[in-house]
Image (tube, rainbow, N blue to C red; front, side, top):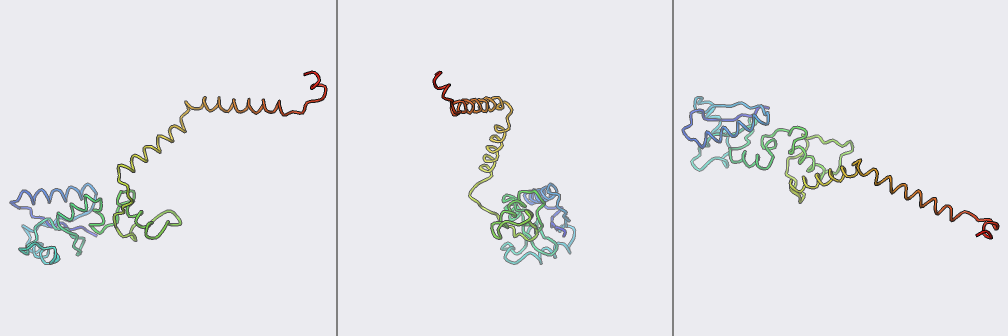
Length: 196
């Protein structure tokens, strides 16, 4: 699957140039394979792009402006929809590609799958079978990070060796208390009672 990005290499609009650079730069950062197709120098590319952008996605004048993004023959969207997907961490879903393992988008897809289908027996999820939907579980990323940090601090406290002497002292006190109880609970002979 190749992502096709229709561009205008000789556009006079700085806004279009910036949008094209933003799309290409982000795809390169994600290491997504794409093919830049120039509509300024190639009439076939221009005609193909214009014919394959859905009618409801075309502007009122009927001529879509670059960048336009396709996954093979399937229309993905223009810059605005790409930008929205980028903001929602759903670029791979936007492009119709499976998210890479360990990415935020893959984790959200796994959560959505579990919510829809219940936990998986072997603990793994086939990403290709998961519909890409954003899961809203009532917490945001900042809360998740705070909870994770609190758990890590708690674990550090439990694992902290500086607390070992305190624990040893408490254990020693318990042993001494048990020994003291043990002395009181032992049967006393009549002779010992008279001596006391």
